[in-house]
Length: 122
Image 1 (cartoon, rainbow, N blue to C red):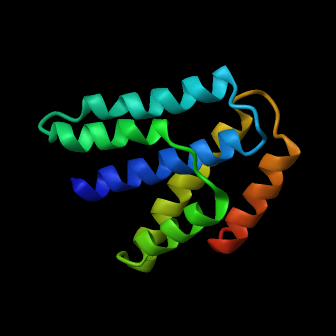
Image 2: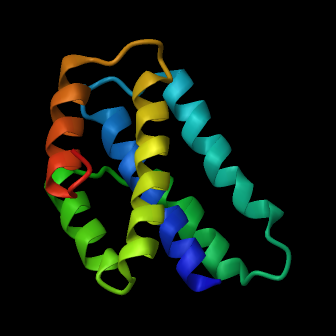
Image 3: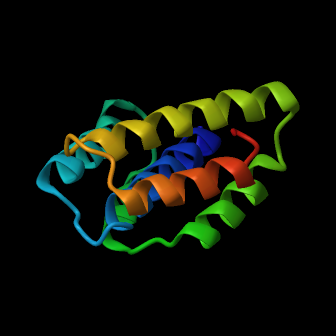
């Protein structure tokens, strides 16, 4: 279960990085990410500390290259198929965050291209 929460935290951090990279964290981006985080309440018998750690991701700024590094380090613990599934999930979420405010800003596109290339998505 802890690995699932680590994936959730990494996904949220990645989404927050993209939401903030253009200098504007719109209400629509915020609502989308907070809705994702709120989903942890659906997990029944999960330690409250784990839930609090996931919710706490909303309180920090995240930058592109540290997120890339954290993602690569996290993925090292998985096989090729698992890595692909995790990356696809984070990638889908990132794309939705980027488009949450109705348009992909230039900074978001640039950061996405670097992120995707560094993680072997593009």
